[in-house]
Length: 342
Image (cartoon, rainbow, N blue to C red):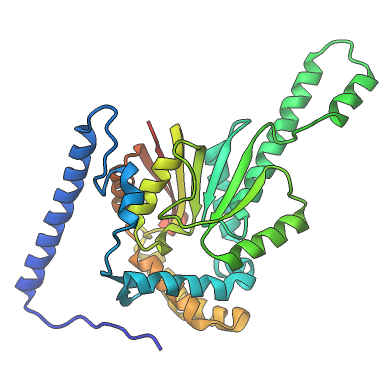
């Protein structure tokens, strides 16, 4: 049974003072983080917790402070277990529920993420929290189609090419992905299991690897990937700032961070309808289709706890990324955030 912490009554003036105080501390914290980044000495590997390279050290000193699990207040240690149980429970029906909850629109959102990425031949992609493979499979299909178009252009540009030469060109194709690779990293074994099953069913073998790993402490070397993606996963991470620092660490200089996540609706009417649908319909769908009301109640609540577009943009900047932008989709129901490691 979930236990909810209800806010106590206090004088309006006290509430206002507390709010202003929190806002001031938040503002100062962000400015201090940016100042520390700007003042970092060349060649000096910082162990400061907010620095992108200090994430692994910080992971060893996690404190058992309180955080949120949906609308429930829990310890940070407890949240990790609860989130793991949610996705372990919904893994088998995860893709079906995504179609039902979004009426299939999530497919368009993910396509837009790939179009925004526009990967080049040889791109090395890390897809975090991508257990069922939706982003990875789209990436593989995209780069394979791109490689085939390039191959056709090269053949058309050649003069007096015989049929045998053309046939050999296709038959001797060693890498249909043009050197591109994707690594799917997820902390949940059940989600990875479903992703591997889908990969076999869809015929994806080359250029694809599956890794069990934590977004807050990625099992990869520094400067390894060209692109880092995380779709509908970062709001479930206990320490979002640490996950962002890890994303920065594993990206090559010039690498790109892309995050597709639920956000804040910017239309009042749509916001009211969206809330009604989220709280009254989605948990019911979860119970009927997946036999799990509580997990989908949490998913709905976790969306409301996630920072706004502007707030999350600042968090990405604080992790060391530059040229950070976002694009709201479907009236702000979701947003694609982008940043570069320069």
